[in-house]
Length: 119
Image (cartoon, rainbow, N blue to C red; front, side):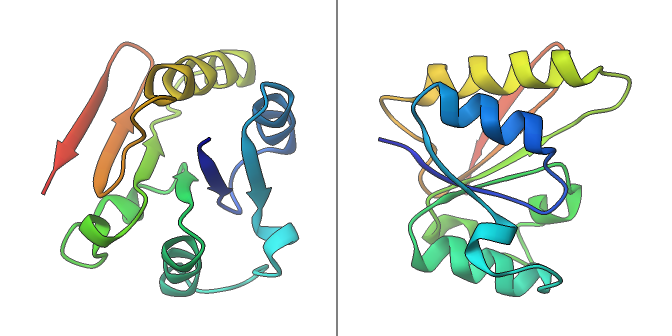
C-alpha cells in the first residue's frame, strides 16, 4: 500500500478523498510538522517511507533534495485547475502508480500530462 505525506499546501478535501480511496495518507498537521522547513518535511517523508505529495514546485529540485533515497515526490501543478479537477487528477495518478509506487523518483503531474523522472 502506498504511504503518503500530504504537504502543508494540500487542501483537506484532497486528503480526505485520498483516505476515502483507502490510501495511507497523513497530513503535515497529523505528523506534527506545522511550520517545519522543507528539509524537515522531506526528511520526515524519507524516514517514514512516505511519498511526499505537494503543490510546491521547490520539492522538484533534484539538487536540493535526495529524491533517489525517498519513497518518491509527487508535485502537482495546479495552475488553472479547480479543486475538483485537482482531486480527480491526483486520485487517477495514485491509482496508476498503486502497484509500483514512485520510489526514488520525481513525478510531476498536471492537467493534461504526468512525467516521472528517474535520477
